[in-house]
Amino acid sequence: MVFDILITIMSLCLIGVMGGLLHSLKALGGGRAYAVPLGAEKEKDMSGTNDMQIFLTYSDIALASSLIIIVLLALLYSLSARLGLKKGVQTLSQFNVFLAFFVLVWLLTMVPLQPIIDVAISGSTYYIQLLVTGTWQFSSQLNEPAWANSWTYNYYFWWLAWGPFVGVFLAKISQGRPVWQYIVGVVVVPTCVTILWFSVFSGSAIGWDSGHSSGIMAAIKIDYTQGLFVFFKQLGWQGGVLIWASLLLLLIFVATSVDSAILVIRNLAGAKSSHRLSLYTWSFVLALSGWVLLLQNNELLNRSLAVIGAVPFLFIFILQLIGFVKEFISELQE
Image (cartoon, rainbow, N blue to C red; front, side, top):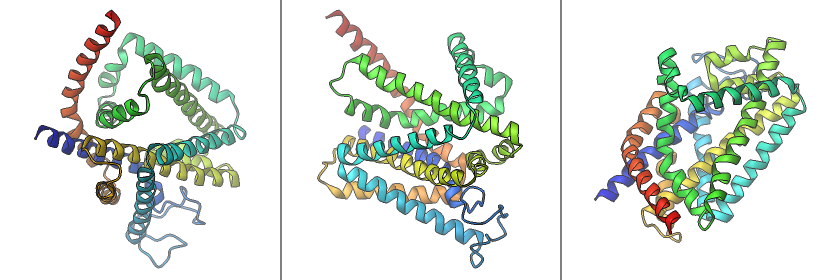
């Protein structure tokens, strides 16, 4: 009974988190001209039509494009989960790593390095200062409570919702490794890659916007998911290639997140790898839920679902942490 309740809660977590991931893909489904270079030169309002899609209303376009996104996404993560950890999940993840490296290196060849270096040094230094002093926990709440409510707490609960899936998946692929390898592979390396990734994209965008007045910051204030595409559009045909590569990168990133979560939740539910019914059931449920959330385009709804699932796991995490510390101390004493 308790286990069934936990599986249900994890399902809510997964649906909420998937909605949050799909929010980053709405550039594909919103018909925005500056996000996807299909020939339309400017964004139309929701009552209008796109130049290339004159016979369809905006709602028809959003409905069709969001359905295409979900179908492609469902095919990707279903096939990946069906092929298993090594043939499916690992292969898709490795392809995404190479694609991300391609986008990163290509961008570096087109932008000045100084703004990137400045952002990397100043951002890392400031983050370390906040981390050491502990002021990061309270400064945003005291100085900008609205920002803290919309981002800080949302990010905490989002990762609480992801925690059960990420933790079990990392434990599965790290079984048999010493603790130091686990820490390096899960904490140190991803942190360094994250610093590099955000420094390159944020530094290059800030430097470009300050030198060309391209409207990147203005676009971010309206819709933060569009800043990257507005930036790339300034880079000519090479920016067009980067736009499509980034959209593919986003699509596969969501797929690699969901396929891992499906493997974890099927494993916890006791489903055998040879049983395809549970795999296809989870794939269909997540695809249907994701389509509804994508059509709603309601970020608050995604947060609410993630929070509903994450709060009960907060208490479980505390108990797990206590158990882990006790077990770790006992092993050190042996």
